Image (tube, rainbow, N blue to C red):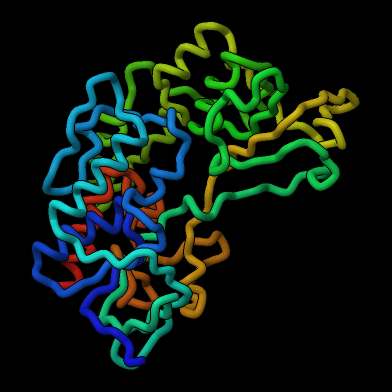
Length: 347
């Protein structure tokens, strides 16, 4: 079978891929988006249903079309999925799904993309596969000996299935805090973190975070010193559920345990039995398809020049974190990087 060809191939049909598609459509560049999922929404359909955005809908928009308002505080994941589905329909973005990309290799006159539905040749590739499919599971002594249930954030759905159990939540970021807030309302919960969680002020939400990311992006683009991102303020956004847990005294982080045991976790000589462990320990970039290009550094990232991979300028990366553009892992922030990426492709 002859390979398919296009000017630009976008890998990933989530928020980053759609933002790239918007600017490619506007620039009248031939492109196709390949998405491994069976339906729209990127990672959002796979999050737990009660997950909410950190800001109102008007601070969670992709380029060209705002997210419809949400009537009750910050929008839930289902509202985001609906918006992304309508967005790709609105702009008639050419998405082929489900198409899983196995590899990207260098060719003489472009990049060769191997997929489950045949081979593609493209002059440029925009990789926008995100991180949700690569959960990070840290190695701890005794993890294999533990007999209870272990799951990652990606597998968590609702607190009700843990009613009457003692749950150990590991990880001091936003997902860990939100899951602890939910679980602690109905069951016994222990929260283990590497360092004391740093809570953002109650009045800081996605609006402020976007302003900080914008300030940083402008500074970096103009050659000014890096003013830093949100890490200087804290790690955990105080969404209503987390504030409520704090106010009822349920946010009580413990230091990391020394080891897991058959029935629980051990701090020093004290063992605490737990029925389940939820690892809210983050994610890594889903870049296995780029392995043939041999571009990854020891920390798992790829050295960038703007939006391009420094050692393969036909490859662009969107949405994996600040190393691919300040705020690029957010719905609102990815538009800036997507615009820059398409501008560099068009020349």
